[in-house]
Length: 162
Length: 162
DNA sequence: CGATCCACTATGGGATTTCATGGTATATCG
DNA sequence: CGATATACCATGAAATCCCATAGTGGATCG
Image (cartoon, rainbow over all chains, first blue to last red; front, side, top):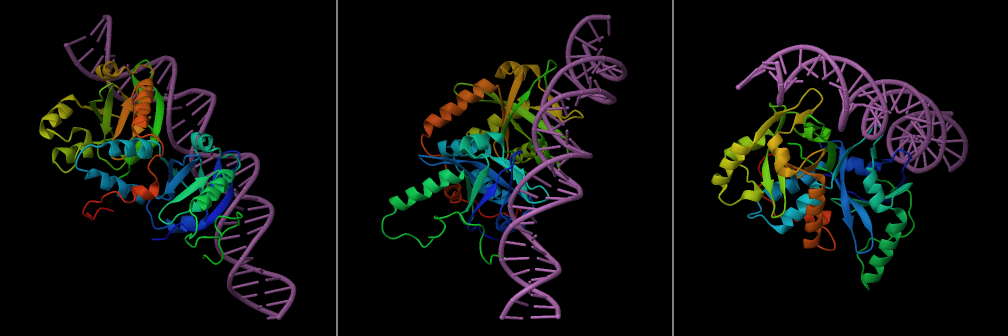
């Protein structure tokens, strides 16, 4: 199973469509459901979107089943993950349609930044993401994990990923 | 196998008909019974409806599935679940007819909020659901669960379900 | 080694289908 | 019968398909 890697800025057209980066799609190629799941996420400062494949959620659902007792945690997860999630199939060119409420919540209008995070990814309004990265840098003084170039300038896709 | 995701508000017409959201129907497409099961549920504050497919109830009956909200006294509760449940087939456009007593109990009149919760869903009077979400938010202020964090949710012994 | 070609990705816009919804007619049942 | 449930059809809005363009990089070939 592939991982979500690298950062890409894609355009959002007037219909709310965005191309999911090709390497993200490749990471989900083997899954039954051809598309992605998005649901809201936030930091203290910003709203963004969490993304993953369907199987990720299915595993999550399977995990919740066995939580011994009804818990606050579970209630929260149910309502803020499943209830707030959108199941977005690709169109034939690999685009999804961002639900209006997600665009509103995150401030996404004409562009969206896809951020690969391994097993999951995120979708941000580009300017908000820049600020977020700046904050991450401030808060991790000294040694940073070696994921440098990601932060800086939004660059078109990876090199040599295929 | 499909999960119920996202939240939708649909209209209830003068006959008590509501469209079941298309993606909910898709999640049940493979099931034998083309329709949904509804039965009463409640919080301290509100009455709502729990919903699922027929096969879920069958597994529940067999004890293979746990209904989180009613983990105690499961057998007794199951009695009320089955007794109070309504088996509602789709009409030809994917609508069901809400039984009048369920509309009365929940306060549903002209609109109904369908809330996807993974393996089950709920149906609420929209205003009541808004209040419910507000309460959930109070309980978990600040940041909501992030995808990577959710990945660490305790997992069950892997059953060969794909 | 350099120029050309090709595959793929991202993007744009129009046409077509699906979905939610409303209404009317027919069947059912006490 | 009177009331209620089911089948049938119609409509507007929205989502999806389909085609067409373009830019990029890699590969091919002379």
